[in-house]
Image (cartoon, rainbow, N blue to C red; front, side, top):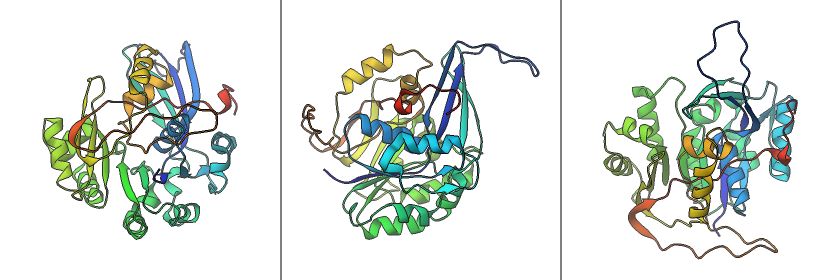
Length: 317
């Protein structure tokens, strides 16, 4: 199994709803559902890998409050060296609506302070040599993003393939953000975007054509994966090995889950992830055999849900 690392945004998600219509200022609305959970692309993916039995390391930071302590406890020993910033932890409040869409209010918090020196202090490049690093939250981790060139140099020096999942820019896909992202892709071996991000980056209306265009900006062996939401299939362009792990069972669970659940939420709003073959654990069943390499095929729009640390549902973590 190739080594695997997650680098990027871990924060707190508070999901409330459903709410309709949007409340008037100065009023109070009672909702039926609430969920406090680990959030952020890096955090969600790390917990998904954990649920699949995949061994990994994760480089992230937290704030110096109870939320920060709670996040570190969720990852146990893996978070032992996470730096604690002298600010509050980033909190994202999602208000769900009856049609399944969500509106988010997010604080800046600790994420902009996450830096490359912190990443380098947490990850052993030699142990990760020949592996993958999932880099996420590009438009939230300001200090780290400014040092992406140094991070890519470090990854190249240790033969680590970088998979990029930028997330949505706070100020939208401006020309500056589009050019920055295309520049990052030249140093990456895997691109993970949703359909809107893909066509916005390229200016092409067809997701498959847009994926091929993005691949043209990347190294020859790179792969581009496009998440297409409720569509049955998602184009995946390039040469790579994907290791599906009970996709049909999880997709069935996702479809049967309520629209407000974390399972549906993580699937609806994030692209599918490429991962290494899950490692067997004592007493667990052996994972399925890996799929053969392919040059141009399709991938199911799947990602497992995140979970509350210790199934804790406290309003005051």
